[in-house]
Length: 579
Ligand SMILES: Nc1nc2c(ncn2[C@@H]2O[C@H](COP(=O)(O)OP(=O)(O)OP(=O)(O)O)[C@@H](O)[C@H]2O)c(=O)[nH]1
Image 1 (tube, helix red, strand yellow):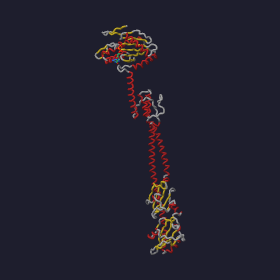
Image 2 (tube, rainbow, N blue to C red; image 1 turned 180 degrees about the vertical axis):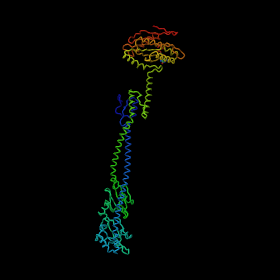
Image 3 (tube, rainbow, N blue to C red; image 1 turned 180 degrees about the horizontal axis):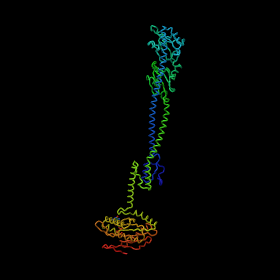
Image 4 (cartoon, rainbow, N blue to C red; image 1 turned 135 degrees about the vertical axis):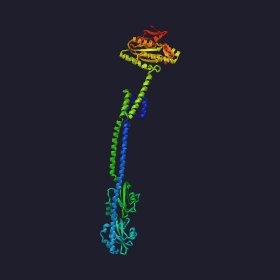
């Protein structure tokens, strides 16, 4: 249930509910929740749009920047790898060159297989280049060895690099394998030695120990960054160098180690979508020219984009700041823009409270608020006119246009109160058309109506504008006279009314003699509406009893009919006074 004079309890209703309540006449709140305000909504909209735009622009820019940084890092890595590959190439070639020069020396000195041991020992620098250099005759049996000569005798005739060196008669770099002598992973360089007739009598094999600290250190020195790692693969995917030593000489599948799989894809390239050990990584690779190896680097993207994290953070901070500024700006802007609406609301409330009228609408705005003001002005005007018309209809007698009983019932007490305050007298004349029933019966109701209309017109013409004429019912009328000086004036009023009715009423073709009886009461002490009406009725009754067509005046409180003044109409139209 609505509370008296207020809005129902905790507000559970929506706008439509408010409209229903308003239509039912229940007061609805004029203030709205801040979150329902247009200011809030527009500010939130502006802020959201700026936030979306800022995040969108920053996000796209940063993604583009990330992609460019990725390319840049990849290019840097590949160029660093090119340097590393060239270094490794040169290193292997230098080792081949060393053995090749020994081969040339053996040929020039016409040395045979039996001289190879001495030849090797005459080149102490070989120990720096290789873990060991051994000589094998054409059957693959060892005939010389720089180190470990007492080691078990091995035969290398089945080794592919040995066979290839015999076949090509040129230097060959082997695939990585585990040395039968040292058990270490090695790569061998095989160099055939020929005699003057071109017959290969010995194949020199120099081993490069892949786990030798010097080799690992050399490779690691090629890295350009602290993060990530460098690895080397043979063309069949066998790992030659890797920070995880246990992988060396293994051949992991591309599924097991995507970084290794990617590095074998092409001569040179990079990919940034590799998951290397659960970590998204950028892998760049480059194939060596001379040895059939690929040198590659794996670089975690997290490290690559570490500087971008702070850029993202700053960008989001800037987006938040712009959003807050946009929200404040939007709020202020909408506040200014909606100022005319607030003004309009104040005008409507003021009109509603009766403090001002509809002329307060500012209809001069050129914008939408002007349109709204003008529309509200028109609506208010037509509603006011309708209300005025309703009020008029509610207080007007439809047939005669005089006031009706309702209006009279309100007016008389007010007039009496006014008179009391100003210590003046009020007179009420109670009129009744004489024998009106016979007019109706003789000429019909329409003529009766016309008589009533003419009667009212004459009555209104007989009194002052400030006097109030009302039709109570049927052929009964009343007139309220204010500021009456005394009974003598009341008599004059009675005379005046009767005189106004004296001429025949011209209705259609007929000229009807119409008379009226008038009972007048004038205020005395303790007068109220009921009392003065009774007094006027009493006077009217006296006139009727005395033969009609006359008036009588009563002073309230002296309820004794002093005299009846009746006018008798003779056939010739002459009037005679009966006292
Ligand atoms: N034409 C018309 N007649 C009405 C209207 N209202 C009431 N009447 C009639 O007015 C007549 C009133 O008659 P009364 O006042 O009772 O009696 P009277 O004939 O005037 O006689 P006295 O008052 O004694 O002189 C009734 O016949 C009603 O039917 C109206 O609006 N138009």
